[in-house]
Length: 93
Image (cartoon, rainbow, N blue to C red; front, side, top):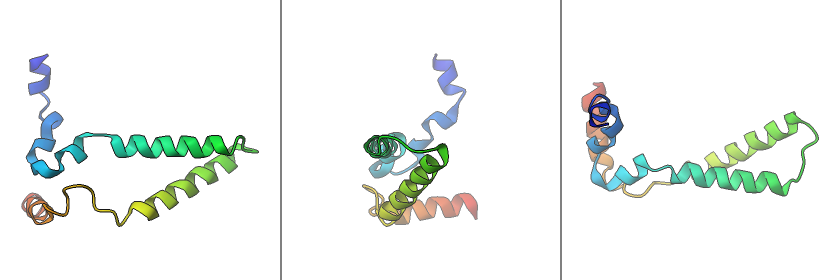
């Protein structure tokens, strides 16, 4: 077990980031919440006439979700914004 963990260094790559944002990186709370809302909204519609209407509904829902949350700054990211920029500048420049 230990060997499999040490042989895969990318498992713990979130430790390279500032402590203030680590929980946002390794949890799936945002994804789970979005999926729960999508499921709730599709159940409210009861039935779709065909698969294309379901596809359009999901696409519309995701576009609306992205629009609502695109300006949101996640917990801790505003505080460490300069540090993250420096990390990426070192890595990609």
